[in-house]
Image (tube, rainbow, N blue to C red; front, side):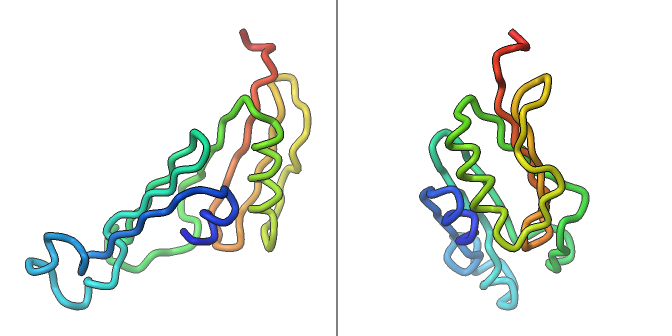
Length: 121
């Protein structure tokens, strides 16, 4: 999440299980897991938890995050920052529906970026 904070230039709050009010009710081995993380950056909120399933996070999985914006410069900045060490599948480019690009970041998370060009109105 600190990598994403740095890429998106946002404010990050992280709470571990051990820091939460539920710590006493949880096994000690879970206390260093992220219970809740929130990243807020210029109209974007990304939330995450380290408490899913078995507690062993796999890379990527069956999810993709999408950043939809009307600010091309901001989107280009996010895309460029997340591109470091990433597999860029589609560079940002103009499409019939707007500007679009996608990548899989250095942690195996898929990201899609779209900027509406106003043609869908």
